[in-house]
Length: 297
Image 1 (tube, rainbow, N blue to C red):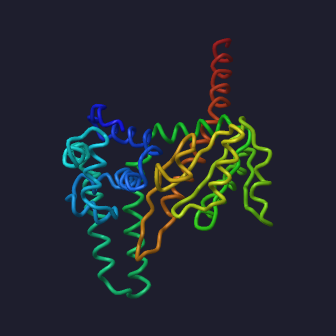
Image 2 (image 1 turned 135 degrees about the vertical axis):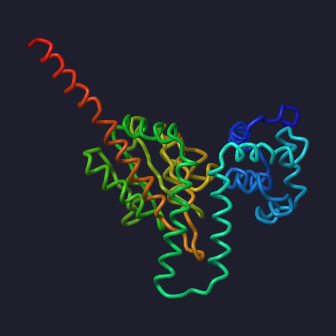
Image 3 (image 1 turned 45 degrees about the vertical axis):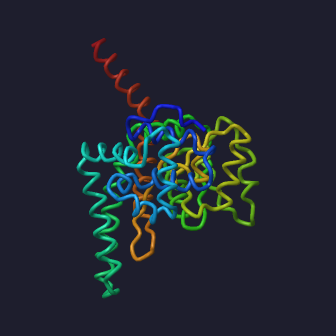
């Protein structure tokens, strides 16, 4: 127990403390930790009873969770997230709009295809707007640096994540980056990563319920001291915790169907940023050469 430590003073400090201590928490407290990390707006705005219902625990468990991080109770912990929302009205508006959108759609019968299209457009628009809130410039830059430093990038994604991984692998090939797409044809998942080294990078895309193949690949990469870049829906998922860097994506869910629009947007930004970053030295060298030539004239 670490209750004697001072309580975090900001939501970011609490987030870091949760990530640091996650493995040492009981399964019930891990369940709450994941909800706190994934739904900070709800933690800020909802009552203890609502939070308990949504996270699937008793209210007393949430109080126990808060106290384990040095707070007097759940209210003090919630205040950190509420203070953060007050300084960022866009995040508050997003949370309210998502709740209103979900309630409206779920209470409406499925209509004509045009109506369904409109629902998916609105849901995906909300998720795309939120992408900039949860993926910081520093996170994206760290991911691009890992890609730039790698001799070879191994890319994997299974089932629902497969299209995103396939797009990333295709795009990396297009910008002449040495890439291995792990497609698992013939059950050769582990064999396709056998040559990975600490100079390479494993890029894995996986969302709940997290493909066992993805977890196995990450374990194999970690065993070989290779860095791992994960794109996942939770910072404490089985594919995120062992990773060197994580990019979190919260996809829209419309009528129980989860989209991939936000993941594809992030994938495009990631590859294009990588392409421009790796071409920058060449452009700089060309600029310097031109300047030197002009100076001699």
